[in-house]
Length: 67
Image (cartoon, rainbow, N blue to C red; front, side, top):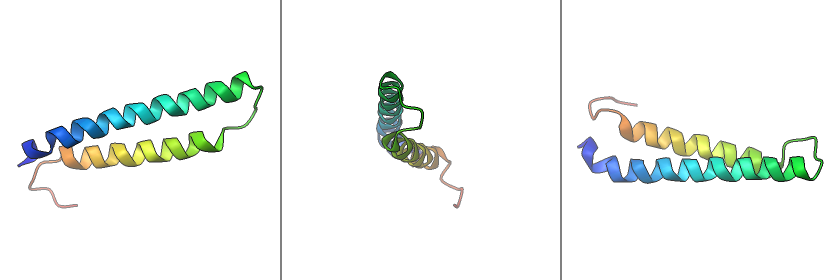
């Protein structure tokens, strides 16, 4: 049954990469602007990326594992 989730897991992994790219872009923008603190958006994007990675990881688990 885990094969059914492969497409969703793959899309989640792609979304995770997009979120990471956006977070890095926010950090670069902050550094270029002379900022010395992490941008609020970067923190939110990182939290969202971790949540998406967790969801992808859950879908990667074998069917007989209970969470």
